[in-house]
Image (cartoon, rainbow, N blue to C red; front, side, top):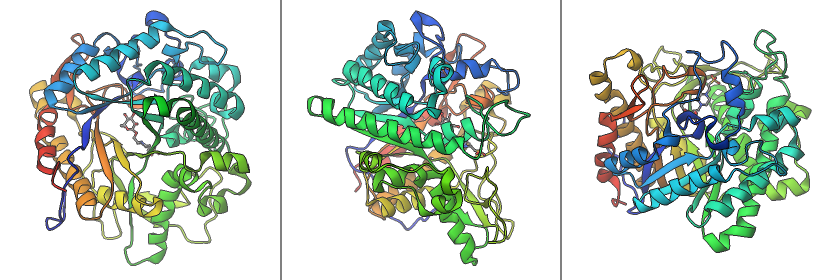
Length: 487
Ligand code: GBH
């Protein structure tokens, strides 16, 4: 992993670092104390959708083990913990006129209290993909903008009310790209919609993802308005959306069209959401390719969405080489990347990075610094929290536990990526204030099941979900100690 050794690197002294998780991936307790099913509970039951046929029914059993999780966080020296709330634990059916489940609220109130007592700052995500199943059955979930926005607004208010005095950092949605594209175009994630009839009886990949993205943007903006109008003065917190996005390098560095295609790929993946949030409109490249299939903002919606971030939540993992297809190649109606080829090798056969257990993830740390700068330039140096960054390791699950605990590949990933981030701050003047590694522990990796591990902690699923910190968990503090307070 190459780095610019000459560059200055440092992070502010109050930098918040720690680890992230998501409710459906760790909690288990799927039917405990009145929790209702989410679309993921339903999706996991369809044969063939999850690699190992598993589900989040038990996962890491964190619903019953928050004390262990907090102990683990303390052992690493973490200052922050990002977790998400299961909507259907709080409102089992999800809707604005449906009953609230006090036991669900109590669980998260205690979690926040216990974190604060342990000196750990909670970052709370309202939505990490686990839509209440009832809302999907009732009206199609995100596909029904008015219903979805009203229900999400209500759910947000309930959570702000219950947790607002304890939580000062709110994330509305995690990676809306995934709900839209993986959930409604590729169909690999719940609810599994796609035009591919071998995979699903329902879906229109050419239209639904853009409708879903639009609904989520409006829902995000409503939740932010509610927070600012009704809670911010009382609670003094901040709120934003978390977007995923990879870095792009041209397949042929000497081809201007490949360089333009690199930016277009980022526009389709990230600016799809970030441009509306910062500018109140979709990127021109998307309008051009998608035409009337891309929803339009009413003047009122545009006003509401514009300026709806107190910070930029950045999930970042990897990079790709990008090759343009030439003007003669008309974009497929189901295309969602800007009519380009996404590759792991450039024109000269150079690999972007080593293979991991995740088919899409090849580590390339220099891209982290470049993307932080790219986004900072485009959006006027916003305050950034890195809300996820991490890697799986090829074959990790097949190793004996002693070897899994010596996760040098992951440790080197973190060292190189955190260094790249510290360079973006000290050298490029970007405003990064926090970093949460994905993930605190091995967990339910969605369609990949439990075979792919992203944790800095090994979870022994065969023996009572026992947790064993890997080397990377214990080294994280040393990495940050090198940089924090050096800018
Ligand atoms: C994050 O997404 C999630 O927030 C987290 O829950 C998850 O556990 C973690 O990553 C590790 O996967 O199908 O070819 O279009 C990461 C970003 C974006 C990675 C979409 C996979 C799909 C590639 N994801 N991407 S493709």
